[in-house]
Length: 200
Ligand code: GLN
Image (cartoon, rainbow, N blue to C red):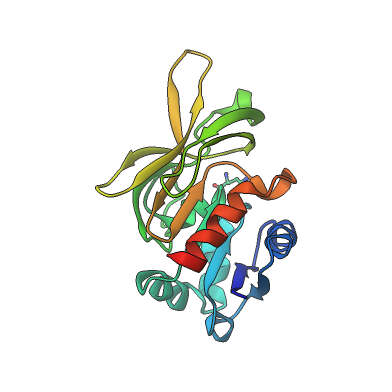
């Protein structure tokens, strides 16, 4: 069975590991570069992207992880993890960097203060599986402002003004959501990521 690492320097690591193990994969908490060896995929959890960036540097994990993503390690990022997978961020703090890999522009804390956190049913429409409605929890969530060539939009959230925003993207083995499927008890999106890890 595949082994999936969970970036474990900051964020909701435990929730992701529980979800992945319920999907039948082995998990490893990743805090140091040597723990990247032998992984079939990695999850970047929700938390705080500025802290993840700093801690990854402090623990010399930043460059090895960035390189592993460049070399094709499948990855699933949720919320702060989505930010860490984005090639470009808006509203980052000065000097904030991401691991990158996904050619998207992400806006941090995009939904605004009045709606710090909320739940909404979003339509999830992946090209590699059937679509479904998913109960999504957003917590100081980013949204995706722009996607590059070849990036598939897999989920959109509706706004009160009738517009919508991109909240799920995928390219190859890289998947990212603005929301937190790890805290819902609903395994369907983790299962889709495990599919990508197993079958590419
Ligand atoms: N706002 C956080 C950040 O910029 C993300 C919040 C979350 O992961 N729930 O990293």
